[in-house]
Length: 216
Image 1 (cartoon, one colour):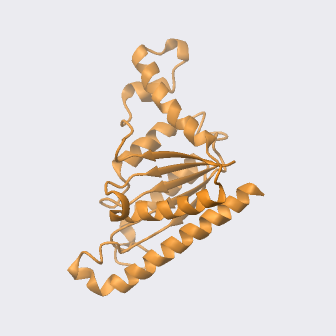
Image 2 (image 1 turned 45 degrees about the vertical axis):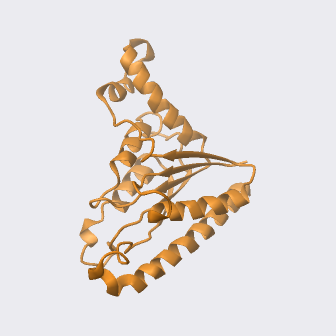
């Protein structure tokens, strides 16, 4: 049966997080389709991946016999994350927008799994693996909006996940999530509610479609 690698990075727990709520809906439908399947779950807020260090970085370019003990230990932690990605038949990532970009914990995970000569460059080892990213945000950064030029989540993740890692990338974008909490955005609540409904619908649909695609 298929293996799903599920990564959450929101600092907020449960339903307090829009990205976690939508990834949970995706995972629920996925598991209904794959009751005997495997889910590898990483909560980067509760159990953060260490940020890349000189030892972890340089070990990727050194022969195993030439690595220091510190390099070997740091590289082993990277390899564990890389192997999780390589084992996955599909990847699900919750990527809320914080200060116009992704959480630093998600960036740390990406820095660890992006290894030139293995997961990137030439023929990436996870090339073609489908990845669904739930890119939630408090406002709207869609084309034509005043803050279109401040959208650095989808642009960045497309460059890394699709461009460098060679993954088959798709997005679900719940937006205007601050509207119910910010009085200045009260007029946007109906648009937020529509976006939220659409995100849950897309999560269920994409989970079913992906399950069927992998089973074919």
